[in-house]
Length: 136
Image (cartoon, rainbow, N blue to C red; front, side):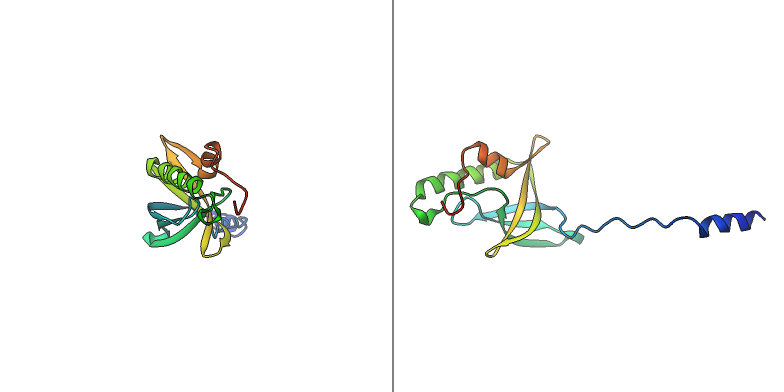
């Protein structure tokens, strides 16, 4: 009799749904390789699932640097140095793809970890005054 009751409990236990798969997981940046011609694009070596490494061109979401080819070369160079300085001083960095592309670049939320605190790089760069309308 006890076996039947146990079996009945297993059969009639409601099935729980599996967690939803997130197709855009965050990836840890192993290292930044070099910036593009301005301060809002960078190549990165990132860790992905199963220990694979990819090299991708990242465009931070929510941040626009001055363009070097629009007559703002001095401003663009300063912003590129600011951008690289934030990345070099970070303890680690993580990216999460937004699902968007900008030319050949992956538009990503780029988070830097410094002293245990995670901050989106767009927030840091805007606080430095290094954000402009698109195409500036």
